[in-house]
Image 1 (cartoon, rainbow, N blue to C red):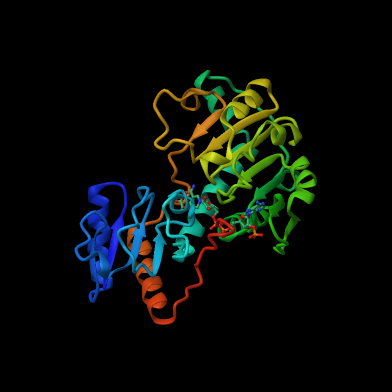
Image 2: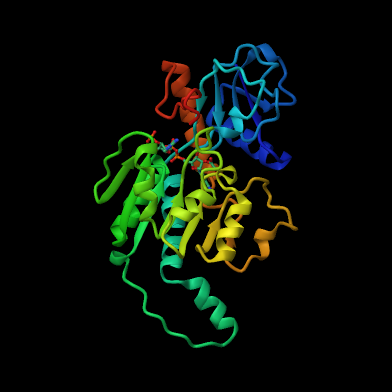
Length: 310
Ligand code: NDP
Ligand code: OXD
C-alpha cells in the first residue's frame, strides 16, 4: 500500500510526505521518482505532474489533485483516463477565495488604482463613486469558489450576477446559464470575475470579443487560469480604454517571466497565484481523509468528472 507524491520542489515534496505519513501511518508514502515497488502504488498525490508520471503504476486507484483544478492532471497526454481524480477543496480554500475576490472587487469598485497613482504624484483628487448597490459585478463559474464569491459580493451589497454551464440558484444572485445567456450576462458586468475551470470550452474565453461586450471602462479579475485569457487582447482593451483595470492571479506561464509586459503595465495588478493557495496542514488533512474514505467506499464528494474537464 503505497502513496506517491509529486509536487514541484524537493522541500515541498518532503514536507507533504512527512505530513501525510503522520496522518496515514499504515501507508508507505514516497516521492513519485523513488516509489519502491511500483505495483504497490495505489494513490498519487500531485500538483502539476510530469507527462507520463502515472505510467509506471498499473494499480492506481485514484489520483489526488492538490488543488481544486484538475487541468494540470488532464494536461498529461499519457494520463490513464480510467483512474478517478479527486480534487482537494474545503472551507479554507473557499474562505481565502472569498477574501481575494472581495478585496479586489472593492479595490476596483472604489478606484483604488487611480487613488494610489494620485498619491504617488501627491495629487488630492476626490471622485464620488456609486455605493456597491449601484455597481454590477459578474462572476463566471458558480462552483465551490465562484458560488461562494458571488454570495460574498451579494452580501456586500453589489448587484451580483453569475454565470455557469447549468442552472444554478443562489440567493441574492441573478444567474445566467450556458452560451445562450452569456451575452445578456456579460453586457451588464462592470466588474467581471473569472472563476471558471480550464476546459476546451473555457480556454481563451477572456478575449477581445468578450471585452468589447462589457460596459466601457469595466474591469477584470482573473483567478481561474491563465489560459482563460487572451493576453494581447487584454492589453489592447486596456490601452484603448475599453477596460480600465485588470487584476490577474493566474498566467499562461507561471512564474510570470520577469520580462512579461503585465509586470509593468500601469493598469494591471499582478498577484502570484495566491488567491487561494491550499495551506499544507489543512490540505494534508483533507487529502488523508479523502484517501481513507475512497479506500473504504470507493467514492468521495470531491471526485472530478474528467470527461467534463472539472
Ligand atoms: P467547480 O468545479 O466547483 O466549479 C466550476 C464552475 O464553473 C461551475 O459552476 C461550472 O458550471 C462552471 N463552468 C464550467 N465550465 C463552464 C462553461 N463552459 N460555461 C459556463 N460555466 C462553466 O470549481 P471551483 O469553484 O472549485 O474552482 C474553479 C477554478 O478556480 C479551478 O478549476 C481553478 O482553475 C481555479 N482556482 C484558482 C485558485 C487560485 O488561487 N487562483 C485556487 C483554486 C482554484 P456548473 O455549475 O454548471 O457545473
Ligand atoms: C487550485 C489552484 O486549483 O490553487 O487549487 O489553482
